[in-house]
Amino acid sequence: MKRNSRLSAILHVILHMAERGKAMTSEELALCMQTNAVVVRRTMAGLREAGFVTSQKGHGGGWVIARDLRDITLRDMYDAVGAPEMFALGNRTETPQCLVEQAVNQALDGAFAEAEALIIERLGSVSLADLAADFHRRFAAHAQHGNSHHAT
Image (cartoon, rainbow, N blue to C red; front, side, top):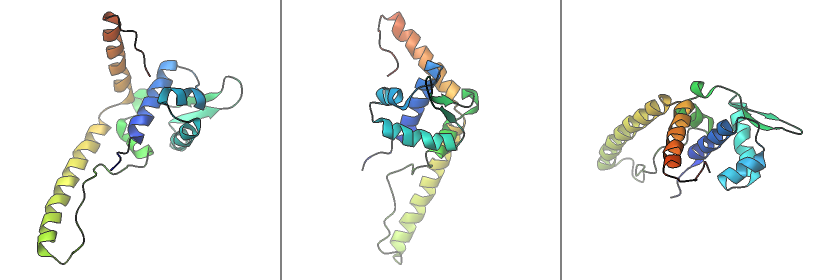
């Protein structure tokens, strides 16, 4: 089963935008993400609807972050990408009248719900400013070791 990486991708895009500090076109963001500009525009349109980015047309235009990174959490971004399913695991439901299946599903449902609540709580406690600060720490450490790798 393919993993849903939209949350990771959108966080990547937002941090590139924050680092640039000015409008970025869909084409520039697509290069950062190694994807197609159409995919970027579709994703960014959802973030615009949620109020996290704005778009500017014309020369010097592009996508701009609309809110302070301290005011945006990973949970906000998770919600903005449609709150995708957390787990690829699920319950067997072929014989709902089976008492064994009922017992198994109840136990799994409880475990899944607890795990998801913990993850969502954690997402709500990390701001995009926290991610940007972590990137800056990593970048400084790489620079000290002569590594010229940058944000890609």
